[in-house]
Image (cartoon, rainbow, N blue to C red; front, side, top):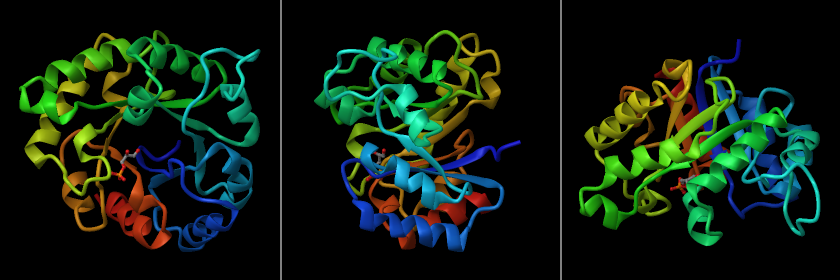
Length: 247
Ligand SMILES: O=C[C@H](O)COP(=O)(O)O
């Protein structure tokens, strides 16, 4: 059985073939017995990344189309990600919701396609700073969760990532109480939506660094992290992975 805790790195639109040497470093160090490690590089790097990951690090995509194939120039089908060696795909990241107009319905349709292709969907939710300031955070997260998780979601094929938009790439993070409040809400709202709700892995993402990882991983219902900037260098990601494995 795969480890429950998940340390996921989202390289976003960063990296090249030379950057795959960072995966070699992680494989050699292998800092995480009892903790699953995932790297989601740009799509062009999935296949060579898989070859370097040596079956100790999972590889994922950052998006997929909701259709299985066809006339969709520039898009990537879930089955193509799977064929290239991916086992996960990030969906509904706030950068795609904002930059590509993705709605909760779009995300749910993509997650259904990912599940059909045998991929685990990491579905991202998160409030903007204006929404937090207006006291709307819990309502926003509840609505996104309800709308973005498709029928057929299970703990085996779905991971939820809470990523406050204002914490991404800013060096700012919510308080531990604020993260705990949202993660408890997500766990609660998964009941009735997913059969094995208690087993669904809930990640926190947004300015996770080596210096704050242990504190974040001690929060109830935080089962791992979705890490952006600090996943690009093995020297930064390895202590985060190690902190999760210890938690
Ligand atoms: O998917 C990752 C998140 O957007 C977090 O990015 P960050 O760790 O650079 O803040």
